[in-house]
Image (tube, rainbow, N blue to C red; front, side, top):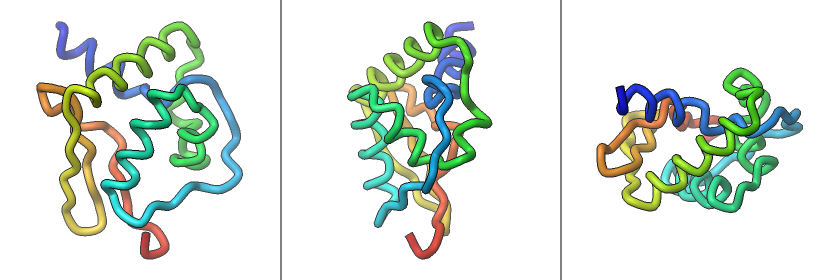
Amino acid sequence: MKSLRISVCLAAVLSFGLMAASEQTLFESPNEAAKSLVEAVKAKDKEKVMKMFGDDAKEIANPDRVEAAKEWSDFARYATIAMNVDVEGDSATINVGAQNWSFPVPVKKKDGK
């Protein structure tokens, strides 16, 4: 049950409030995207995180602010323990924590970045 709870918490890690993203942030590499995501979550910079995911961020938004805040805290803690990025073609997966948990939203190549 604990692993299910962790998965549910982290699946919604980007859900700290609803914001409209005007333009999605692009990165030079999947590693840069992962590092920026972790830094933004640790800083609780919801605007920066939402811009990373663009308008798709609304799809995974959690309307419960208390639960969402815990999810951000959990993700930041797991990413501090361990983080790596697996790249396969035009897609990459961010893995965090001692269990090497795969973040449910892949990093995708867009406009050559």
